[in-house]
Length: 330
Image (cartoon, rainbow, N blue to C red; front, top):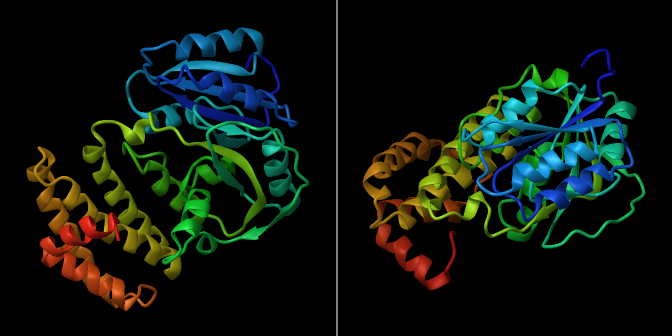
């Protein structure tokens, strides 16, 4: 960096057509109480004014680094940001989200005080950003405390702390032991984070909702080709299952196994009669055949769910009737 001191933290922000939200996102990062950071804004070939806004911010604040990684997807954008990062610690913020002012002060404090390689925080889902002030609060945490087989509201409030690359501060040395982001269109975080959780033995939770997850129905997860992308979720759940299984983390691995099996049913239902049906019906059957025996032997999964998944797979009309009757994905 031409003799300049490297920043302590590198914040990576992948962006694609977020002209409505990128300014608010960057404002929330620049408003941090901890100030020794760089922000690598990696634009993925936006067709709106997103990159122009990023460049404008970079002229006002030298900590903003505008980068181009054209049309290669969010995984490639994050990897490109990692490759160009100078900080000893890495954070990720999605370009339509916000973070509270004390986010990186508290996350870094948790790492330094406890000599660990990663800290995580809680989040809140919101449609607007309201700046808040918190009192520091941290404790050691474990992956399994963020999963639940029966409480949908609990999963909604906690799962992203486990599965999202955001809500975390990661020592760069830990990343050397982990895979980079793989080229999935949805669910790429799940595999990346499974590596993080399983490659270090001590993680601390800042038990505060510092990350603001913007509920945006125009984001990549809600595009017209959602059904095509959704198959990535199936694959990433089974990969996460294998990673936690290898560590003998039975509860978390079982959680991902059940999510994968239920997604097989839901995906088969949603692609029926679409151009994707012929392409994916065989892979769906192959995944079911590979994991059904393990699923049925899993002690953490209820007998009821085992029975339903098996019946619904072999008798698809029962699942169709169930979906129409309950408007549920099980």
